Image (cartoon, rainbow, N blue to C red):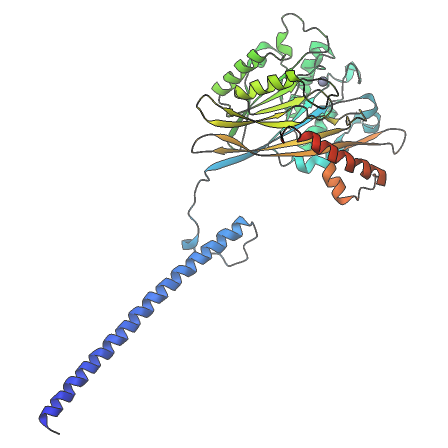
Length: 423
Ligand SMILES: [Zn+2]
């Protein structure tokens, strides 16, 4: 081997060794990089699956996650709350004996509303039209035409989940001014917020605002009249009468006092008419245009259609209001010509924190039927959700012909309710 050859070999060895070293370093670097990518994508997919699981509200079955992969706490950009409204709470004479409890000399109406309690429980503002005074036992319990119902009827509504009563209607003064005041005493003692009648001027001028899930709802209630029973002079505060200008002023005051959304109960329209009158439409639409969000109508004792109305407010923004012309009878002894039906109107509201605006996200209407039956000498009553009752058809108290009637009426009512939405 020549010296020249030897040194050439040595050079080759050095070059080879360096190449090998570089290759090894390169492989190590590549491995490190790949590993890093992999661990990143693992973290991401863990977070995704956790978020997915939470969104699906399935229980988390995996081990406690590392603190590093918990999503950062954040404020949602909106808040949701639910308004629920039902129609007339009537107390006709035949409704009383079946609810009477001899042992305690009292009444219990809890069974009447039990079948729809789950639906009411989903609401935050749960409102009904109390179409009878609850003046007290001393006044005697009476049905049509001058009502006075046991306060236990309101207790049953409270027990069912209702928390707001509209008290302005044509029967507010059936037992006089004192009867109307006693009614407020009795139902407010149970816990109800009332709107539409007042003991004195101060109470009548007080803004009724109920906050739920950070949404402040202002409530108003008015009636077309009091069945010819005169409102005594100086007692004008006892019940609110419909007067468009006054209602608009009251709405402005509610907004000044912090109401973010406004619901107005209106006792108006013609009895037993299944479509709203021109007067109903004109007033309700004017009030939506003036800033009301929900109009909750009652008095016709039958369901009337509801409609969504688009308006442009004074800031040039588009807004939608809901008008329910008549919510029908929620509980009564009236039968036939769809007087034995009512509906639970559910409105899902959403407040967007960035703009402060409140939108009506969804309106859900659940028709209800007052089932009346006679297991003994006295009638019993139950408010049944029609669609759910038809879905199971397993109610021991209902016959095949009951189901057939319900089926036909359900189709008829849905058509009526949505008839103004399809125009
Ligand atoms: Zn009425």
